[in-house]
Image (cartoon, rainbow, N blue to C red; front, side, top):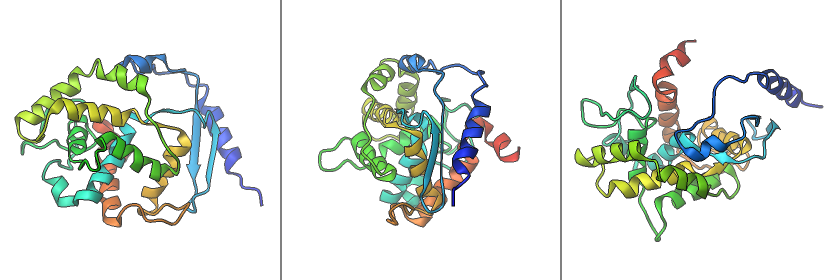
Length: 249
């Protein structure tokens, strides 16, 4: 029997395609060169069947969408208590790149930049691999294919990362970061430069939606307790200072 999902997605993307509001991100110079006419949509069923329409094979840098997956990786490796000692789980009510900490001296949550940089610093480097390469391999497993870095976006952001470097130095000053903040911030920027398609993202997200098990392969990639922690923080903090509006409307 033919599924109605492709037609449904086609109708949704057609309805959205007429909206030309907004503007290209320019806080990273290279992002301002993106094609604003590209649009894609993908979804996964509970059994891992993926449907997509539009520019669904066009790659783009994952940027802040990487935050919940890196949080999941570090939780899986270190345990929830060890990560909570460094990063809180409370909504910040502030901009995602605010240079501030909670009253207890920790970043308020792992979805804002101060928390995400801290989470990146907790990656245990092994076998001579850089932290961003460890994450690329982890996200590749989630996506079911080999992902790569966009070197031009990485180079562009590194040259203008003054605010994230300020956050890094603040975190080092109060002892949240324990090593060179420049190396950590550069690793975080490289994490954000991993390239994905909408089909990659929907498969990665399906692992979280399925309690840590890849619905395509049946392989468990994350513990259920880790997924519960990640989804809870995404719900309360994932939309930054608009999280309350998102939850209630």
